[in-house]
Length: 179
Image 1 (spheres, rainbow, N blue to C red):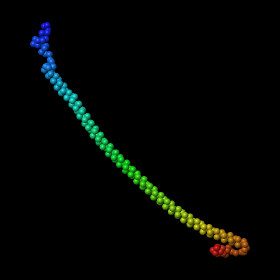
Image 2: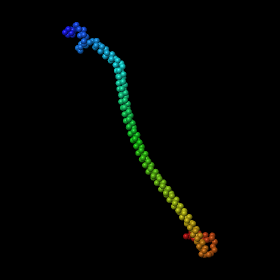
Image 3: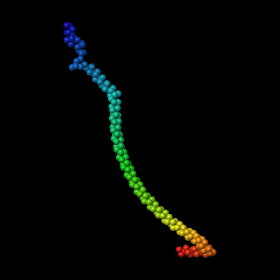
Image 4: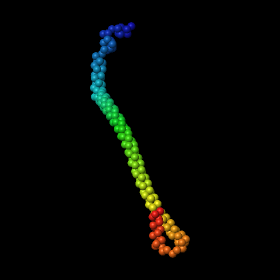
């Protein structure tokens, strides 16, 4: 029982005075905990929090710039899309104009070619008529001369008269002129 007395008597036992409880914490241990906490906070602030916060700020800046760049790119794409649509519209309009002008030029060229062909056909027809008239006139002259020659030969054979050829020619020309 002596052991029980020692445990129950706080003045006689030095262990009882050093035993902390939740209601009465040891001041040295609390101070040591606070010092450790503050020391660890300073080390973390110096070596961990500053780089982490800097990295977070850098990341935030990068994200902000990325969003701004994305907005700029989107605006540029919209502008390019509008410009592209405008170029396409202008190209279609130019193509329509070129096609219209080509049709008009083709129609006009067709008329010019037709008119020129008619004119050339008229000239050829006129030249052919003139050539035919000349050939007819030449044929008539040749036919008259041959007819006269044949008539002289026939007349000479029939009459058996000696007429000279000069007087025969005069007579033939006179007779052919009358005919």
